[in-house]
Length: 395
Ligand SMILES: O=C(O)CCC(=O)C(=O)O
Image (cartoon, rainbow, N blue to C red):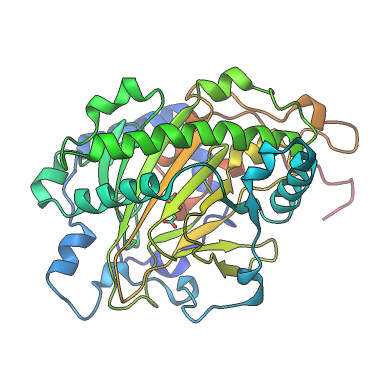
């Protein structure tokens, strides 16, 4: 854990291609052995960040202290942050404005892979209801939450801390509960029954997110010049994971992060947050805080869209910072194709100038990968990237 000799050489996984992870992942036997080793350990016990903060410490425990190079710049406020794209989705209701909206989506996805949406049709009552039930869940006594504790990323419902408490070398200032949500009837019985309104409020919100993502995917596909119906059935039957995050206030926010830099694997993620705390990285590797806009939802492109677009659009690297004043809650609705569906570049986006740049991958393979690799150790997407052949004589 923290303090191990590896800590000083940790790299952000957005730029890091681990030879070791390629070796394990490329070798199914090794991957299976590694998984068996993890399962044999069977360690589901951990201390949540909520429990740590209850003891009112002035300093964060050593295992949450990031190496200097990975610490956030908490004074970051820049011009770009205030002009990050905000798209009015009600333009979709007016045929005359549709092409303007598609152009805005194209610009946002091309430049960043990120935008916020307003007038999206989800009421602030529903959005707030889901965040309130998240808060009530994390306020439950520890033993009630611990029934859902697991480090097994394949579990359809799991409560945890940091990213994966069994793999993380440095811990992140975050507790979470994640649950599958599509189709809701298949999963909701497994969700927490306490607080009593959790299933209703979170379930209602989750179903609306699933409808919204279909709309959003259509406009992103159109913005790529693809048919809005491309992969329609796969999207309808796709997987939805709701990551419900709690970032307690942190006495030393400049030393820690709520979540490390990462991209989401799926097609797109819709994020609802109680207040500001998300940061995104632009193509020049600069971090920008995402301003909180009351009632807005944040849309982030995931790796599957990068693959489908054959690299025209890139998934957005993002991280969560923490603050000293108050707890922050967020709900990330993570959408992807179903577990076993292999996704590759859209044939329409491949030609002589743009040869296939990614191998096919699936959500299931991504989960297998992260079940043995911490986010700082390499990225599943790097395995899918087809590196261009060097010309003869090139060093
Ligand atoms: O809470 C946030 O702002 C980020 C959440 C996130 O990136 C995730 O759950 O994957």
